[in-house]
Image 1 (cartoon, rainbow, N blue to C red):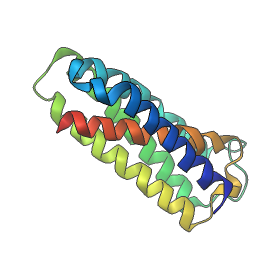
Image 2 (cartoon, one colour):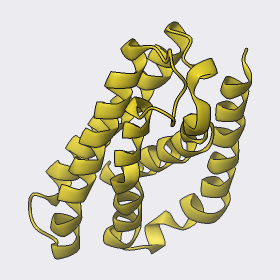
Image 3 (cartoon, rainbow, N blue to C red):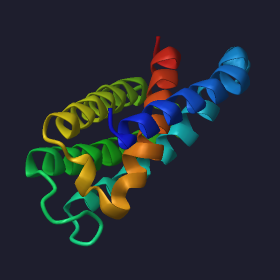
Length: 152
């Protein structure tokens, strides 16, 4: 097991503990909108996944089989999150559908990126983009889980 995998797993565990202690026990006390909007805003920053394609943000040799799907999958998730925000805020009838689409695509993107990074040995090439899978991906996974709980 490499260090990036250890960082990802431990960060995931810590974000899960935070959610389990502070949010999940009180989830039914909050309006859906007041939980979903901050999650969607967080995921709107996933355009930063394009760093996997930026020279200097990653090291030369990062496997393109990982970098391109991860970068563009994140960009799609960011756009879907941004498109969902006005519908959720206004209570529009399409909000639920948009959030389902965002959440399914965003979750599949993260699971695919983790799989491809492992298959193609991307971790030694992460460079300054290392913080994305080590810190940010675990937070995104936990918030996707919370969003699925809200949607169900």
